[in-house]
Structure formats: C-alpha cells, structure tokens
Image 1 (cartoon, rainbow, N blue to C red):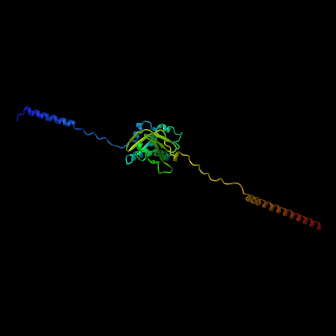
Image 2 (tube, rainbow, N blue to C red):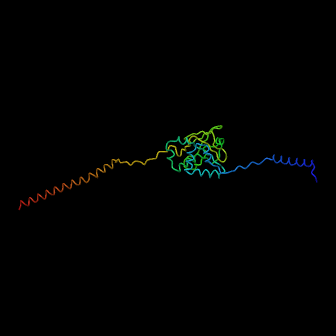
Image 3 (cartoon, helix red, strand yellow):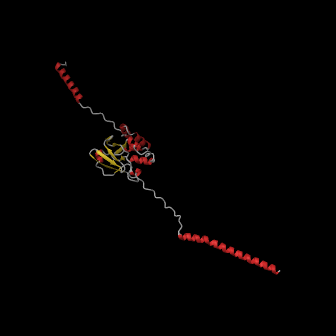
Length: 245
C-alpha cells in the first residue's frame, strides 16, 4: 500500500511524541556508595589534630574506634583536642603516663553513643565515657544553652562551639583543652608512712639494765676481796711455820 502524505505525517508525529516522553522521564540518581566511617579522615580534614592522630595510632586506640563505629547501633561521640591543646599541657604530662593510662585518657574523650550538640544539653550528668567502669570517676558533665555547650571534667571546663562532623553514627567536636580526668590528674592522697620505731627506754627498762650491769660488778669485787684475804692467811701461816722450825 502506498504511503500517503497524511500517514507519513502521523507517523512522524507519533515518533516525535515518543522521543519527547522519553526525554522528560526523570532519571533515578546514582546510588551513593556506602562504606565504613573513617575517623582519621575527619581529623585530617580538620587540619590541626596531628598529635591526637599520633597518640591514637601509638596506643592502637584508632583500631578500636573504627571497629566500634562500624559495628555499634548506638554510634559514637568524640571530643578531639587540637594540637594547641596538647601543647598547653604541662611539660612531660603525657610521657609521665603509662601506656594503659594514655589509653584511658583517650577513652575519656569518647562517649559510646551519638549525640548532637542539642542532645548534649538534655543529658543526665555525669555522662559515662568509654573509660567508665574502671577505678575512679570517668564521667563528663555538660551544661550550656542554645548552641553553646560546656563540658567539665572537674579539673577543666571546655566550650564546644562547632562540630567537625555531626552525622550518625559519628559526631566529632574539636576542643581547645585536653579533657583531664581527676582519676589521672587529680591530687593524689598522701601515702601513709609506717610508724617510726621508738628508741627511747622506759624508766623500768633503764633501771633493770642498770641493775643487770651493776650485778656482775659487785660479784667481781667480792671475789677479788676473798682472794686477797685468802692470800694473806696463807702467807701468814707460812711465816709462822718458818719461825717454829
């Protein structure tokens, strides 16, 4: 059958409408690749946490954080001291801590739950940290209002004004002071010294010593006197014998 101009026109119109419909169909966005949360990348992006990263690697605490972040349903909240915060510590403060105490110090900066800044104003103080459950007090106290949050350890108070990251499962807040726990940096109670042994003699023991010392001296004098008297008697007897003979 011959194609008429009208049929050709209708065919072209249908083809054009089909192409327009395909062009207007929205394309589904490409899925965002999901992967483990990289805490180190968050700190490196902040650009002022070289000392913290070094300490996390030295104590192998970084591996524990990564494992917990990607396995816990509660998430984590971490307070990250800046390089200046560590530089402002007393000289040798970190080196004076044992390896275990350095781990405890780092864990004291971590909450085993995800908190936004507004959430931190609603918590019941003290809030347990990753170091809680060990000997001593390892909780943090939060106060403040609006967008200002203060965190206190009992030794230092730090103000939190912004976040490096605040997306579940990880919240990271920079702090310009190291959070010093009282269990590590508080005043230690003085160590009780053993009672000193007394060297003074009682009057009774002194008199007994005097008597004991005097006793042998008296006996020696008496024995000497008897020996002298016996010698005189013997001598006198010999003289008398000589005269009589």
